[in-house]
Amino acid sequence: MKPVYFNHDGGVDDLVSVLLLTQMETVHLLGISVIPADSYLEPAVSATEKIVNVFGKEPVEVAASTSRGVNPFPSEWRLHPYYVDALPVLNETDDQPSLVVDEPAHKHMIRKIHEASEPVTLVFTGPLTDLARALDRDPTIEDKIERLYWMGGTFKEKGNVQEPHHDSTAEWNAFWDPVSTDRVWKSSLDILLVSLESTDELPLTNARRKEWAKLRNHEKIDFLGQCYASVPPLVFSETNSTYYLWDVFTAAMAGKPSFATEKEVTCIVHTEGASQGRIEKSPTARSVHYVDSVDADAFFRYMIELLK
Ligand code: AGV
Ligand code: CA
Image 1 (cartoon, helix red, strand yellow):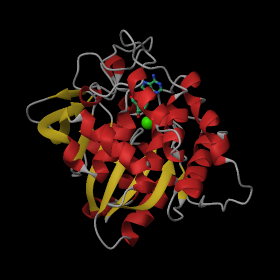
Image 2: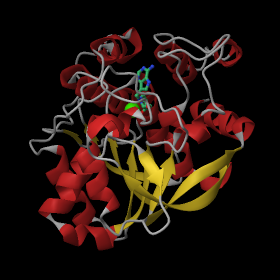
Image 3: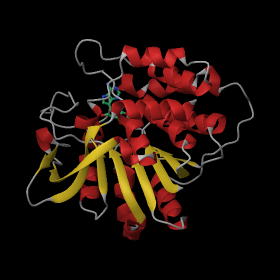
């Protein structure tokens, strides 16, 4: 089993990813931390705890982040975890144990990495702020990190940030805290990006919803459908609120990397100005891998099998 540490930012797909990671036989989940980027902190932490308590096979510690970003997410998006936290399936019992620890996310992650007997795989489905802080505080963790799987960034001309003072070249997780993204680029970590070009092949559609609805007698598939019910599908063309299976695919890759082919590229991170958060190919820069092509059907099948 692969030791995995998970840091997420409380969106609906971050929370579905918590569920998936707790179900994988290939993964030993060492800890989870929650950063209030695409969420408010309290409901995101609470929903995480409940998902582990209700669906998990064993308790997992949950740490809250003290990090705050430079470019905040729209508050309509940040409200989503209130909805998940209130779902009846997570609230049937009154006596759930508390899993929340007294340490902030970055210190919790440092401790869990040092306590592990083998190199740890990191899965990040929000901004990289807690990882940047952990690397600043204790650079020796670098040698104990197997790989970073990160949902973030894009090499496309148009990213998914649509904000007044930005040129739209960035993806949101990179844009929330561009300096921390750059800090992680300055490390020696092996990085696999699940960037927007790869998740473009995985939109939330009504056909997928219908498949999940037909299987809703399985409690965890019902939960999946309920979570994605709070966000709009792709029907005709993409809008600012269209949802893709961004984080869930990233979590699945950590559990079973066979759904994709990878490419290597050298690139820099823009930290300031109208392109902040943009990740741009550059000949002499740091090398990363990104997901190049996706076997969408195999991924959706894997997800359903895990949750059955
Ligand atoms: O950029 C994708 C990241 C993923 O980690 N998040 C959502 C996923 O959790 C930000 C985001 C981009 N577009 C969004 C986002 C939207 N329409 N609604 C909510 N979050
Ligand atoms: Ca996310």
